[in-house]
Image: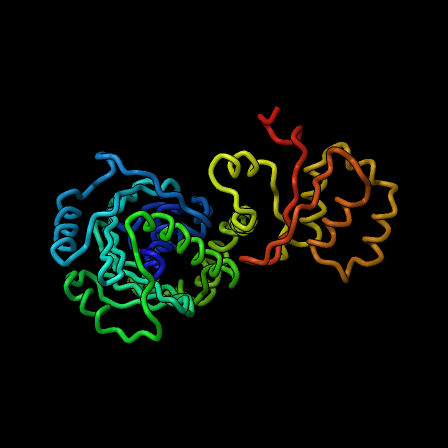
Length: 350
C-alpha cells in the first residue's frame, strides 16, 4: 500500500528510500542511488505510524484539496488526514467509498508533489492499487498484489481501471475508521516480504537507474543494492519484534513499556555476530562462562550451528540475572528468537 496495501506500496517504499537516504531527486535518481550506497542515510523503516496531520503538514494544499474534491464528487467520503512519524515531510488525506469498497489516499510530499492511490483488498487476500504516482513503477510487487494506472493519470481513469479489473473474489468492506490501521498493516506486510527475500534487488536498482537515464555497470548496480540492504539490515530484528508483539496482542501503553526490554536474534546473523552480541549484552558477567562447558560444546559443534542456536546455548548456559531470557520464536519476516533483557540492562528503566 501505499496505499494500502495494495499497491501503492512500492511507491511508499521508494519514498522511504528517498526520505531515509536523502531527498535528492533533483539531482537524478542514479545519483540518488549512488548516495544511498555511500552510507549517508539511515534505514527504511520496517513499520510506520500514522499521526493526525496539522495544518502545517501540507506543502501543496490547493492540489490536495482539488484531488479530494474530485474523489468526493465520485462518491468518496473523507476519512481523515495524517502524517507518517517515520517519514518526515509526508502527509496524506484518506477517503473511502463504501459502495465500491475502495480506499483512497492523496499524498503530499516535498519535491515529489501530490499523487493519488485508489486501492482495495479482496476476501482471498489479494489486492490491487490504481495510482497516478510518478515514482515506484520500477519496484517489484508482492505476488498477490497488482498495480494499475500511469503517472499523472486522471482520477476518473483510475476509477475506470478498478471498475473494469477482473477479480477472483469479492472486495472487503471498507470504513473510515479502518483506513489508518489497514494502511499501517499493509506497509508492514510489504516490508516483511521485502526483508524476507533479502531487500532491494539488483534488477530493481537497474530499472531505477535506467528510468533516470543512467546506464551504470553491473558492478555498480550490485554495489548499490548491497549497500542499501546492509543499511536496512537492522530493520530485520525490528520487524521480528513487531510481529512478536502483534502475536502477543499487545497494543498501546503495554506494548511501548515492553519494547525496550526485547531483542531479536535472527537467522541471517552470523555465529560470530551472535557471540559478540551476547558478550556486549552481559558485559563483565560474560566472564562467568569462560570456563563453562558451553564454550567447549560450541567449539565442537561450530560448523553445525546457526546464530540462533549459538545465542540460545550461551543464554541458557546458567541461571544468571544479567542473561537475556528466551520468550519465543517468530517466523516473519524470517526466523528469529525473541529474548527479554533484565531491567537493569535497559537505560532509563530504573
